[in-house]
Amino acid sequence: MKPISFSSLRFYLVGVVCALNAILASDISAQSKSLPNAIDHPLIKPFQDSRITAYAQTEWTEASLPQAKSSKQDASKTLDLRTVEGKETRIHYLSPVGKTVLEVHRNYRDALLAAGLQITMSCEQQCEHLYRLWRNQAKPFERQFKWDDGHHHGFSHYDAPDDNDGRMIVGFFPANPQRSKTHVLIYHSTAFGGGKKVDPMVSSFLQIIEEKAQPQGQVTVNADALKQSLQKTGHASLYGLLFDTGKSELKPESQAQLQEMIATLKAQPQWKLIIVGHTDNVGSIDNNLALSQARAQSVVHALIQAGIDKQRLLAKGLANFAPVASNANEEGRALNRRVEIVLQ
Image (cartoon, rainbow, N blue to C red):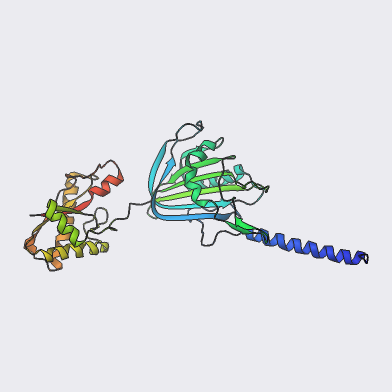
């Protein structure tokens, strides 16, 4: 076997080093990329050079947020929670290597306070119990970030928040003409490494809920169901007739329900109907009486425009005199805001 010359060995080692550098550069580049189609929320800028490893957005849902000025409760105690409804965005970031949880947490906190966030709960130390109480909200983020080192491939565990050095802020931005009331929960911790020996990174979990009412009118009562309900009980409640808050003009989304009412009336030419408007208990009785009457009249007008004889229709407003649910919460108030049709 021929001995290897020094120059040949040097050339070989240089080649190995170049190859390793290329692999490391490729790995660093891959690790620095965010998830495809994931975007920062316009209200909150991420910590500098962070990357998104998990992202989810829901147009309308509910979320439970901790509510206490400060929290150092024992892990066995239950935290006061408040349920809010609206458009939810959840984002998980990893900070650059070398940053501490405290540094990232304080930067977010200071920036949010400067932007007008009103804090309802904060936890600066020993916040592990908070993680345990609400961590199910972060579970959909697990194992979203795919990696491939050329020899093995799978899904990273780094996108999971952990209970190590956890810190949390919960608060809200008040409503203004440009946006609705917006709730924010941010939880920072050392990122869970899945059992691997890696340089520590900071995990930042953001949950943002922009308040808005439940979408209405997505369920339309068809003509057959209207006929059966009127024959059986003499009335039917309709939630597919939509109005803006405080307004009496029918929204365009009401057309599907109107067409079913028209079909019912044309199929039963002997029927006469009372169109009854109902409101929730927000506002004065006098205003709600006037509003419910105007809404009922709008429905009658739309039916007449479609060819239904006006002698078959009567509009009546009952304000909030006949609730079908409690007005103590938005869910009940949404059920009380309705139009009923009643056989004369």
